[in-house]
Image (cartoon, rainbow, N blue to C red; front, side, top):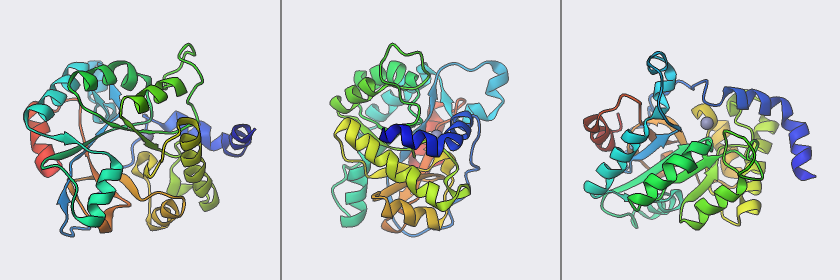
Length: 268
Ligand SMILES: [Zn+2]
């Protein structure tokens, strides 16, 4: 019943969010906060699959990688000594200044697309890597048999069992800074609660849909129980001051291995 209520309350936003997911992009502004911090590359992935030549010239190339490139990027992480860390490890390290491996990396996937499970997970497992999946409960289906572009709850359970991290991406993927504040609060709180109840995990981090946020949204995210949040700002330098808008690396379709290694170092 709780879920049904949420759907009524958020229906219109759910619709706009689902349609917009993957089709729009919040312009990645430069983060003006250049405080000294620690280097923690947080990689941002969305789709894994091939694009047509036409699509390769659209913004879709900003959030897609081929299966081959993703596999190669995982290989590069292992060969270059990177160790995957969770958002909670990042939070603890930003607070205490310690606890991270020599070369940390956080591999993140947004939106909960099913190919992340079907294509991405076997590649991660092959390389012994773990990742963080920022998902929004709105479109998550009950069973693998349901035709859906999104993962289902049993698949998310399997990710948790495999040592991967599930975190929040709001309830229905709206532009949080553009909807009424009260709805933004419900979006963030209901997502965290639903993921925790369904999966028996602690959810402490949120990826703002489209990277859309402002200082009010950051404060509301903290009140909603999140201790870190990730943005679409480019960079690898993270600090306690920026823990509610951590920088991420956009891995693009056309990125070469050299591009990928450079981005791990400097974020772009
Ligand atoms: Zn998203």
